[in-house]
Image (cartoon, rainbow, N blue to C red; front, side, top):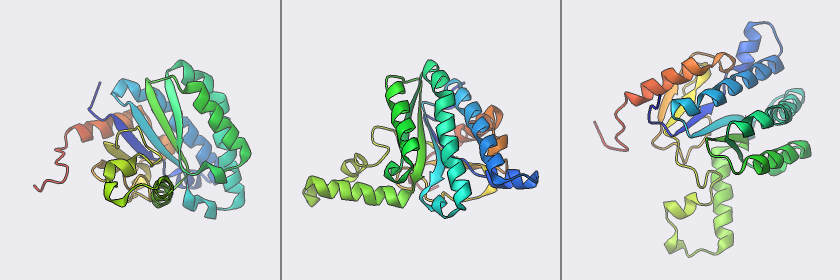
Length: 230
């Protein structure tokens, strides 16, 4: 089934609240969130999704307790090591958004390895946002542009977009936020300017192919005007 959304972006929210509701530490929720990611990655191509961007770790997440941050870094490494064979076989190409230079070396090594291993795939493009913030991305893009010496009069939106982390990717058609919150939280704020937004009270660890299909069905029923007034 194809609902017409080529690029879906998901803010993977609610892991901590899911764990707290079960009397478990937050890391248990994050681990359950990995299972949700596996389900969504497997389901996406059959639902017509070509690009899937997921918000895994924001620039603000460094403020969390050190033990939780360390656990999140370990989970990234675990996910890449345990899933890379299946992801490659399923034709998933992996890339990363954000400033990886601040991440632990073990994360950077596995990220680079996953990118190299899957660079020839194209069934699904999975972009994992690690140490990502929309404003930080824009600032880094501006610095990159300044270093090129581009004539300011030649600067336009297309030229700027070529310096964003998402260069080469279409803008998201749909942004999904589990967990009931109603904000973008600094995720793809340049790219999501005309994206449709779908929110659900379902916490991310409980997210599955059915919830994804429901979000895509709701998207397909919307009349996208791209700035036009009703």
